[in-house]
Amino acid sequence: MGWPSQASAQQLLDRVVARVNTYAITLTDVNAALALGVVDVPAGDTQEGIATQRLIDRQLVLVEVARFAPPEPDMAAVDREIATMKERAGARLDAVMQATGLDEARLRDIARDTLRIQAYLNQRFGTTVQVSDEEVALYYRNHASEFQRNGTVIPFDEAQSTARQSAAAARRGATILQWMRDLRQRAEIVEPTVR
Image 1 (tube, rainbow, N blue to C red):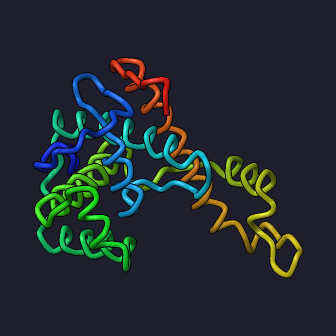
Image 2 (tube, one colour):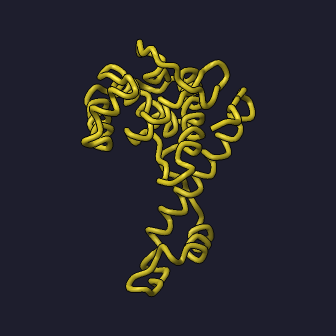
């Protein structure tokens, strides 16, 4: 993956927050990923720790991507992903780039990696998952708060299409989560205890 801290000529030492096999993830990597929205992390006191876990997962997937390469993303898609990252950083972009050692080439590499991960996951797990009518009904019952209008749960007949999409997305997510657990078990992951 190669985040900015490894490519920059900065003289400052960076704190390693995790090591995945032989690849080091630094605090600078975490800060860049958070600022650019590369990892989706809720705000709060545990943001750094959660972002570190997501970057560990990202690195594990990139190892798989390198082994079973999906098609290269086209340049227009990479440009759109770069624009999205810059938009997420907003007015802080210049400060983030300076603080993390990012440059346009690194932004392009990060955007390309993101798109390659998405393509690989779609190739491996599909973009849609078939679920049974029973699974859809169970999802509707167990997630009634998702199917409310004006404080009242809408009838199943009206919610069925949305419930089917949500149930399929939940099953795909659970499958990917289990796969990630398996990747973690096969990898050597070291996280210093001091944060």
